Length: 234
Image (cartoon, rainbow, N blue to C red; front, top):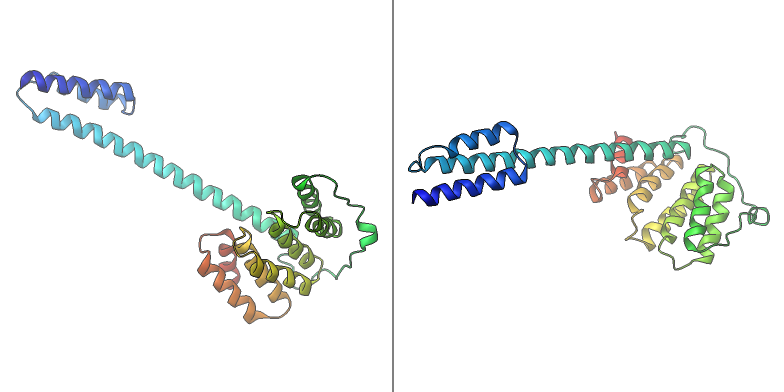
């Protein structure tokens, strides 16, 4: 019995030292218990408890660190979203930009001639540089060139954004409704719902805006768009 206990202690100690998961003072405590009398099996319990406590502390620390990183990423995403929302006119309710008509003959100078990924990147680049007339023409051309592409729903979303930023609220509303009705599985659904509420607000449809925002918060409570909708509702 005594030899068995001693073997168990040595194996546990070896596992701990190999894993490196314990602090130096914790390893020292276990070394002290290893030198105790072989007939006192309570030291085995102490040894096991030391191991389990250390593992729990280590796991708890990892979870807390991951939660912190997740919250930090969510905050950064929300700030980036709000920044883009503002730059595209998302907070300009009192003085929306005048409507701008797209001159298809001139704007098709934004010719798309690459593959699907290249064409989408070209169209989105106009959004990032605030060249909204070119962006609108480019996304319309993208949809004609790649009607079955997975990112067609994204293109429709950006057409809604672009038209809203240009003061063309009825057209923007049409694009957001199209996205919600025809592409219900799109990752852009929460964003489209938030922007649909904004468009309704600009058009004076306060009840419709509140309804769609409440639905957004209910269906996608953890999304960045829902966080913005909550602020708008308050």
